[in-house]
Image (spheres, rainbow over the protein chains, first blue to last red):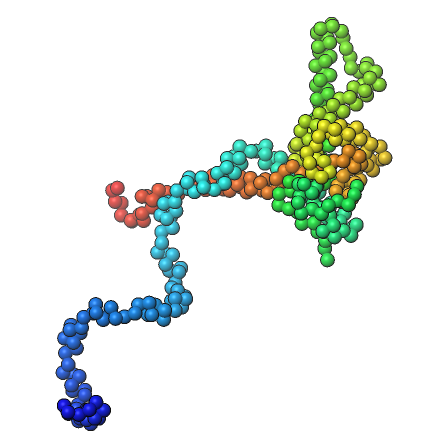
Length: 156
Length: 193
């Protein structure tokens, strides 16, 4: 077989293998020793991780995650305790609004009265517009300098 | 199809409607009457003190009384509109007088408006009908003086204040949570801490 060409050698091997009990050979192979001789690091170096990750369907993977079960293991209270509320409020306008609201009983009373007046104004305006068959775009909301989108008044 | 004017969230600068203006006028009537009564009381007291004259306003000449009232109302409105663009009633209801194009009210237009104001009452109050049916919600005296009345009140900010007040009230009502160190599950046996 040493002097045979490649295809000839392959054919001879194939014929010889018919007489070899493959199962008996495999049984005698010490797989652990084979594995011990494998350099895993070299094997991993030859693995294209990027290509492997490209083949992973992350959406499908994420769908398999039970988020509720994950959240059950999270102690929300301890997370919230770690939040600096004062700093958080300071970064928003909520602090200013809260300061105004706590000292604005009279302001809230005024707001209530004004809101009632505005609500009634709007109700009357709607009915008048219906009675006079006005289209919404024909009626300006305010003077042109104060309400830029308002159409110019045609006259008194 | 319903044709509705969709209100802007803020309303600042929008034409004021009839109810707000009527309410502001009612407040102004009350305030001006109280102020006049107070001033007259002070004047009578001073007259009593300085001149030792026993002045009784009930004996006052009606013509003189009417003249005092007219002068007082003129001063009340012209000074309010020329100095601030609003009266006390308008300030409470969040209204402001501006010129027809939206520019700030100047003294001349404030004076014109005050002079023309009584004219809106004369034809059975029909001079005020324009506030209801007019496209710019202007009364007769507004048309004469070249002015209009707009909201000077931020409805959106008011809504945020109301929401914040409600949120604050809820925060106060919530019981404070136990500190984390004491939140460990308690065992059934009586362990010493």
